Image (tube, rainbow, N blue to C red):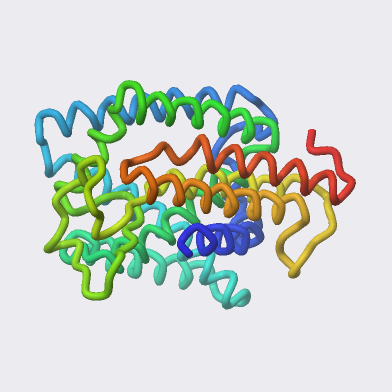
Length: 290
């Protein structure tokens, strides 16, 4: 499951990223204002993408997405290199991560088959979750998740501009999402016709990377900022509660998607499950979350 892979990799990335002081995406990790800054940047980015999609400036979308993917891959592959070979020279690890990131980004552009998209998607989502999760403390992260859950609800069910944005990315065959085929032999490159009409049979299910990143950020933040009993050597009890809560809410979400046969806003489900699981984990561990 892509969601579980993203969560596991992001938690494993926390120590190497912190050891190289890559936990300063925001100035003060305790400030709730960071959440508001994040939302403002997200709104500006979404607005810019909608304008670009509206006027079909395809090369600009591809360029922006390629730079975003490439830069995130460099961080995550560097962290994985340090994690797997702790004694590696940082210059060597950096060089290898840059080369591999360039290759993966080029492959995503030239041959965007579903398994390439999913492989890059897992790495990008894990890297983004780890980088933001270690830079935001618990309270700002929860505030951010609540705001984004409300925003996702509005953008999917009310204004529906998120669906238009998803269609624009899929037309380019370079979507920033996970592709989950329903049958062997499915080809995203050959069968991609945009999001299926309401009630229509699907050849694949699609999940935005943000649906994996946002709840995972809370698990990473819990692991980085809370002193709680560790499990499995790299995850504490509140973070594990967050993971379990996210997975339960994901099952509920997918059941609704299958039954209703139309796109659903993921974050209202996933963020709620993540927060509930986190709070139960704090209760089980006997730690105060704030």
